[in-house]
Length: 497
Image (tube, rainbow, N blue to C red; front, side):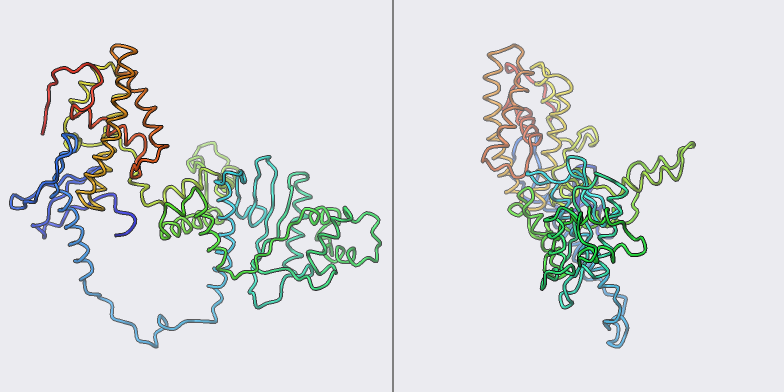
């Protein structure tokens, strides 16, 4: 089974009369079985979860049959001959190599974005292809400009006299000139390494160390080799020496000495170290996070419009000003963007979404909801909180169905019964404490129960990926089954399906 499942079920074709008919709803499907389709019922887990094993088994069987029908479809396209262009690799086209170099830069930017999630503090924002390949905004509002340069490892390492290096430091010097005091550092990052065979200006490490040790070029003789190098970079007014020296004083050299694919592996490792994902996610999931994060970087690097595009359609809009603002917003990634990419890439992302009962057809809601309302009302629980519990019941119902579909009905029941035992204990303690403090005590019991459920999430008990609201939904189902009371017991008017 893949590590994520479709969120909807498709109604079978009319040509497959024997398959169960699925009525699609926004939360979970209801199976209408043909009269001859009989299956053993699953153990009853309470009026709130009166689901039959054949419902889940029918869903699973249909999905299997549908997949097998798809796999058996004959291909209408004949195989290409060996001499066809599609079967011949073109080794002279450099396009794929260019894309690999861009992917290195995108993965590098993605790693910088992951630093925003780190507990020890990272950048405030990352900009892609804005002034530099990667522009990093720190918490203090200052910036770091990054140039990412790639080179095949079989080629010589970077020298200060190489045109790519000279072009990069010219750009840095221009930023010093345009934005005085805004840049705390610059970085020349490469997958290769820097030439350091001799202590001459062609050695980038020696060059930057020489300038830092002297604190600049003040009183440096005109015939000094370092000053000669600086003059060569500034030729034809391409840079001013004072700005160039200021940039070189802030320059950090980052050499990784690895092939172009290594940065993707580093990205995968960095994701695994983020939020403990290495111990909670499969490798496939980590790869999906990496690919989705790189895609987000590509969008930010490709004149993607951010913010509200509707601003372009305002009658009094200055199109150029609005477009520039939206382009800048599209280049910027903040913590919320990175966390959104991670969360939406997780296999359980759709499963863990809480459900609002108001968007669910009444016939798909658990029976006994009317019982729960009566008991909560008798306890004095506020209407808004009753709605929260109803939504939570719908959410745990959806979770239960997904367990049964992905695994087995028995395992889904075992999980639910385990959660019911834990939550019932919390409900009992909250009821005892609340009943001694007020009467009616339902509102106070609600507050105490929510606090205990939050504590439960911090414990060592297995909760199968459920959150506080899912546990509150379990409390709702226990209320429906009259195993939990929010007031002194009374005769309840029940309506069962």
